[in-house]
Length: 66
Image 1 (cartoon, rainbow, N blue to C red):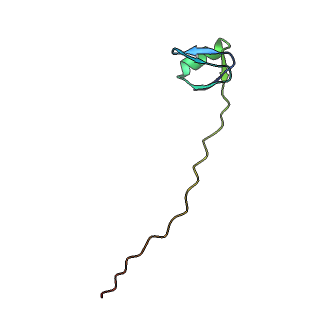
Image 2: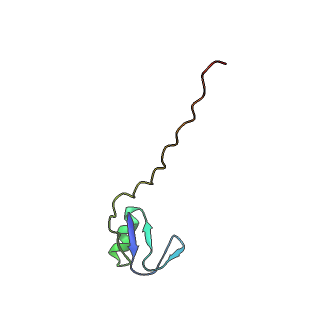
Image 3: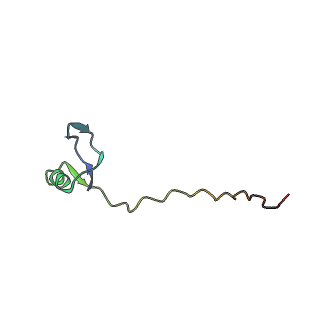
C-alpha cells in the first residue's frame, strides 16, 4: 500500500522526512495511518506507458542471383 508521511518517521531503521511516499505492506501502512503518522497516497492510476520508438525499416537483402 502506498502512503505519504505527514510526520517524519523512521521505518526499518531508515529515516524518512515528512512528505515522503512509501510502499509498505498493508498492515504497516494501516498502523502508520491509524497513529496519525501517514495518510493514504491518492491513487494516481497506472503509470503512463513509455513512448515507443518509431519502427526502423529493415534492410532487405538482395536475393538476385549474380
